[in-house]
Length: 133
Image 1 (cartoon, rainbow, N blue to C red):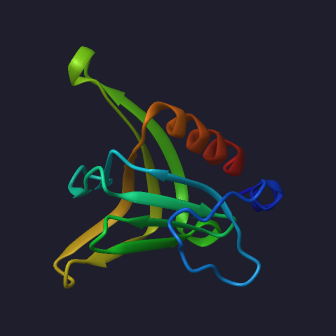
Image 2: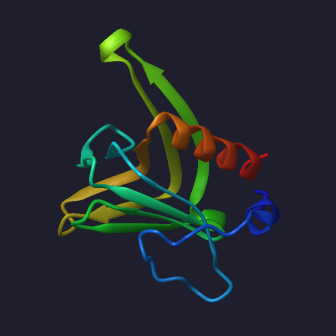
């Protein structure tokens, strides 16, 4: 995992006002069109947002906040495209090496589906591909 790449990226505005740790900077943030689990369960709609720092990914659906450590928790990512025409769907699947328990410990997930607008999916995919080289 190329953490040096993340540290070299320029800092961007902390649009969603996430609380940063020491030596942490925001390198990407975006409003999501949808947020889901790796299996496709919807966690949040178009009010969801994500912030990527040089250390963490923070996903927020305005009800809950999920935080994963980039170096320790992320296994891989995949850009997934399915359907056609108005039924076309595209998202980035980020798989984790741990299980996250949520919703009063009644539900579990091992990854996220991040649905972006087109310009943001390109930026996020670039970050992930350079990170996981």
